[in-house]
Length: 476
Ligand code: LLP
Image (cartoon, rainbow, N blue to C red; front, side, top):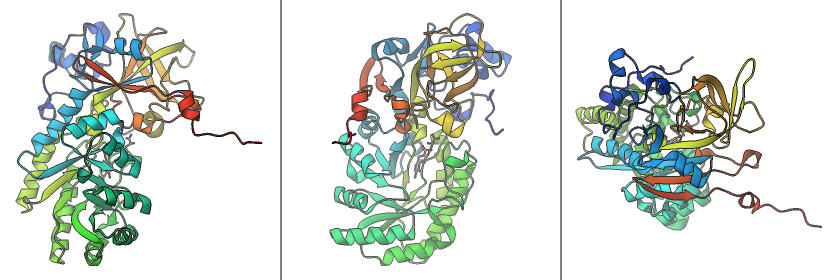
């Protein structure tokens, strides 16, 4: 069914750059199942290796110490008690470690890493990346305002998206952003007009559609011919020639983004080849290309997937770039999920257990409004008890309280649980809170950022008054 292998090996080159788990606690065998550790036991010798058995997605920043799931040095159960559930908990060290893998990969190169903040646009998260020197890939004026509010600088912002409005173009030009990634010929004309009205030149890249298959879920595959994104390969050169003639535009670079949750290097290597072919053709037609932006898309481990580590991926891509004689070009990338996905978990409480003839339901207080990925993409998120019990596990359908059957968090999960227990939904740092809704008039969850032993509440739990603030009864 296209599911990734459950028992995938974790050791090996793609893990080489992860720091060793800190004080990894060996989980007794009876706990492994509900701690979600079965898949990390590929062979007998690994069972003897406590470093292997204790790995969760997000390790070593999320790990069991003394039968308690921690975020860095903080017990998640303490956070749940203090802040209530559902609660998103992020590890700052995990974000910075993910960023460092990219920085290592680009050492010695001219690069701008632009965090694709749609993955998680909470101010406290943006602030971490702004302080670490990142730029940002935004897809709305709202996202741009968030960057500025969190202390990021406009001159490191790139603006992507197929439907930028004139108003958004105006505010982005006024702020002085680094580049617009233009997605159609019609958008190019409008951006030119808006820039001329303001008396400025808009820096542009053209997002090309390289027509490569990223082999991911169809909803998050963006670089195929029949996707709505980018300008078709065949039209790229003439579009650049047109852009170069428009006096409100300044051509800067070329851009592509082929999809998300990509777990092998091949689609990137193919996309790079096609991009470089285009750069040659565009420059032969007289338009110089200063930077190459290869988008985001690198996948993470949700369920034993082994995407290439960012530094190893870029080693391969840079080797290709050099071999083809483009080693002098400035680079840009737009990673989202790979910077934050495994830097966050969602802590939720078991409200009710409802064993049945066909299925056992475990009803938790997080729902599809907090964690939309299972309902939207049939996505898998590991679910682990904060304080694993020694009892025998049963198989549960983990579901939320929302009034539709699409509201599920995990199918057929083996868990030893009781009412009132706390669970962590792992790999919840990306595309969870940023996609959360108020469906069923549920308040969006609170968020905390952990840094060592320090805990900061970066988003208060929403209230119903917050939700109703901008609504009006009809008068009279
Ligand atoms: N750049 C552009 C132009 C994008 O459209 C995206 C994501 C990114 C960068 C960042 O991609 P990442 O590194 O995060 O894969 N909601 C879906 C994912 C949608 C991705 C949309 N575009 C999910 O939960 O899987």
